Image (cartoon, rainbow, N blue to C red; front, side, top):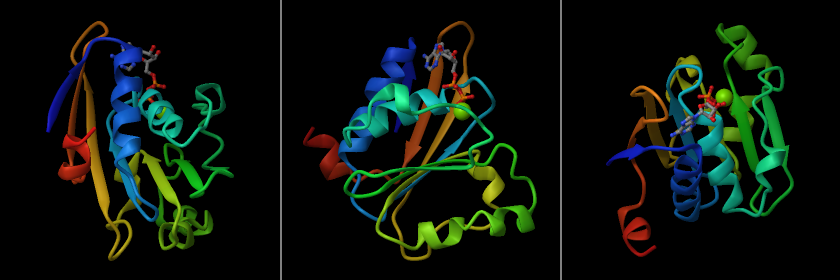
Length: 148
Ligand code: ADP
Ligand code: MG
């Protein structure tokens, strides 16, 4: 599925709709350069679980932020995690095997496919100039999506 967003609010709304289609154990992998709107999209996804937008930050020093909602929600930012030893020491593999919802920025740094046996939703964001963003998504449950 392919979308065009023309404002941060539009990207957040799309994120909220994505969030409503997720079930425990789902992994959302986000790909795209700095400033394409990954964190903005995460704000929308998180809002579907009752997490206030202001709680989702783009402080890339926090690799894994855990939100105590039900199911547990993890916002993971791998921007600074560029080798597999660093990645392993984050403990990410345990999280991805559990029943939480995990949303991963810079998922290209994962190096190997996330979550065996888990549903993985992949989303690519790109900047089309100004406030325009192209957002391409695969793996979302189409039935849930179409019923929203
Ligand atoms: P990333 O996490 O990919 O680095 P952020 O979500 O932190 O990106 O930042 C995106 C920046 O682009 C913000 O400053 C936001 O206001 C701006 N922006 C402008 N238009 C859009 C849009 N359509 N969608 C998302 N962000 C947008
Ligand atoms: Mg970000």
